[in-house]
Amino acid sequence: MKTTIAKIGFYSNIICAIHCTIFPLFMVFLPTAGLYLFVDELIELVVLFVSTFFNLFNLCLGYKKHKSNKALSVFAFGFMFFLGSNLIKDLITKKS
Figure 1 (tube, rainbow, N blue to C red):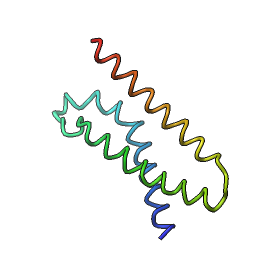
Figure 2: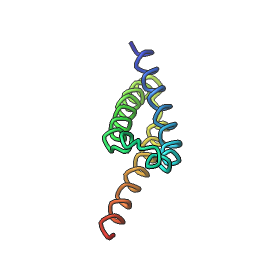
Figure 3: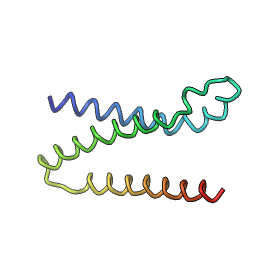
């Protein structure tokens, strides 16, 4: 059970990283191709929440086993960076 959840968390994290790396480049060509299906914010949220859920679960299991806060602090830093960037984006778009 633990290894299956760990694999799901790992692969969802890889999908999230690939999505976040390639999607901004891909977005430039979406209007010319007429593919507006992938410009939905719901896709962004689903990828984010699936990845976050499984990775938090794996962090909890890892903490119970290793009793180390290193991975949790890296996750917290990344999550705070993500939240901060979204707040800045919202502030910029509201001013426009």
